[in-house]
Image (tube, rainbow, N blue to C red; front, side):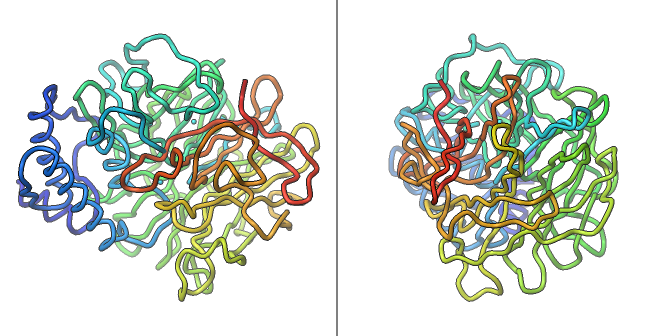
Length: 473
């Protein structure tokens, strides 16, 4: 069995563990070192370091080497389960216990109101009750502006919450993130779609369960990570859109878009038997729903001829949100030096992780996207204004809107870098909010998790940044 785990890990760069399956607790440092070596051995193969700090350093080097060799199965710009394992629940255990730092995201919308709304990890315990029900935890704690929204005060660490898709529903805010390994109190579990919740975005979110506990039928069994999930209310229920690796003949190994439904935002969501959209020979990732004029649309990153590292496209959805209702229209392609992460490839990119929403104060339809390499501080977010969900769209600048706290789009006391994976949400108070992932300070993969950060979006009228993100008081 161990040889099979090692073989699959080397082939895919993913951890082939059953979802939400607890790993043996490791309360003592010596025991935990052995636990980490066993866990990471399933991903990177044989690890035989000496004991103590040298062992942890050797494991770090081995994981970094794996990441460089494989680029996590693609030169991608979105999060992967392997990244979550290292940058989130496991990597924090290598450190001294101080807060780590925060792999793109999607917007959410409420369909039955006709108003664009939105509906946001590093290490926590697996659910011990029905999937989607809250786990026992201390009362919610405030999320100071200088701290990530996914800061876990009890654990003393930032939780990995890559590609956060945000939804306001049921008097609370929910955030859905890319698959990751989460730990608390020495107990670790793999979550296909980690769901975090809080009373509002001024309060730190906590992991409440796995929103998609069962692997979708069309998703490859040996590469079952779910990327960039985003949820919206559609009619009387909820739809969750996501990206994953297909296991079907014909498009096996390709990233495709899927959809799942649930009666409540807590889930469990049940996936449709077939993908919503696949492109033979190319990737389709990072779905983002948006409502405009009472109609539902889906944005995503689409690879293809002339855009091997992605273009931002949009298409109308059927009223139930479970199928495309028309062809995709290209909204944006990589064009600026700051977006270039893979020189020499066809097209500038990666360009990915779109989000769209109307600003309630101005009525302008804002489009954001992420570009460059997610594992670095170069990952950044652009801003455009669009005439409609199908375009045309106009960039507000030839420079990134968001990258670090020094960017013109930020007015924050936080210290962060590599800002991307943004999603929009209109809150119950009528304000537009943004949730994104970023590394704390100057952190980067694999030594730091991509934590979720929450801000309000305000109009400034400035030439380089007509809108900016401000701390939530």
